[in-house]
Image (cartoon, rainbow, N blue to C red; front, top):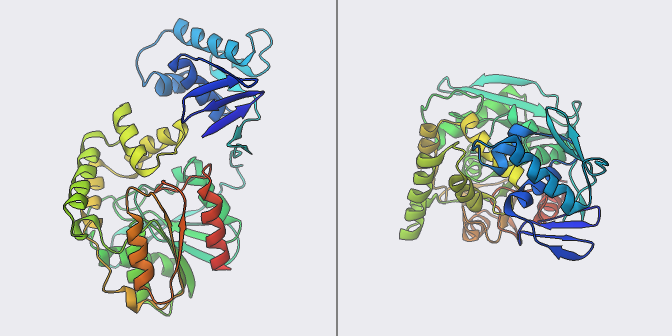
Length: 392
């Protein structure tokens, strides 16, 4: 990803900086600090945030921070007197004065208070488990099947999930929920099998007053949506399946997939929600290799907000066992299967299994490698356009 501003360019992938077309070396901490400030253009970046993101929470002196800030100013052609590009907010932090472009496009603005208003409600699944859900946006209904790593409240302020909610909310009344054992839903781990998760979707649809509606499902929400569509064909008008699978890792029959399943569980057990750079790098490389530092930091914070380490492992064990290959031919709803070609979590071959098994399904493979769709990547528009075209 490239960030451009005031005749300067930061290439986050190459870790390079240029000004007026001339490449200039930056110390690693100065580069990371400039990237952090640019990614939060026109918003306050606190000193605590700088310490967390640039120094990974280590104890650091005010003199060290001031030294790096001065180095940033020299690099971009600013100074402490003019503060034309980098403003000091006394005793609080710093504000980079935009605009900043991301890969040639203007950075996404923060959501306003009017766009982020939502009412969260509760319903009960068949076994009594409390499920939290909310509806936002305008237009005909679209239900999102529950999936890993959500929190209804925090998602509104998320640089990962908010863009999805905003873009879909321009066209649909978007109903979403936290799956059981995560977010604001009941955190007690009871019944994580496929039938229970289908019951949760059914409970939300009923509580939201949905009659006949399309479903958007991502990742492990895909087998849940498929099973619901087979159980309630009269309810589902269309299916959009993104980055999903028919067979969980433990059911795909290869030693490599089983080893990958164990590796993911080990990573979760040892690093879930921790601030250590190693876990953040491993998790982001797997799920969203093109993420910004801001998105990586949010994902780390979201982990503990969404689920305990124990619940996260229990969910991974359960969803790795899902297998809906026997249900595919019974799906009657028109279906769009969307998948990133280099997705490392669920391989693109699983998209082919879905599209081949579901009668009349349309397959749309996008160039990209992010399991979690990221608004700043080139594949974002392709995914959104395909979905909106299909849903009409």
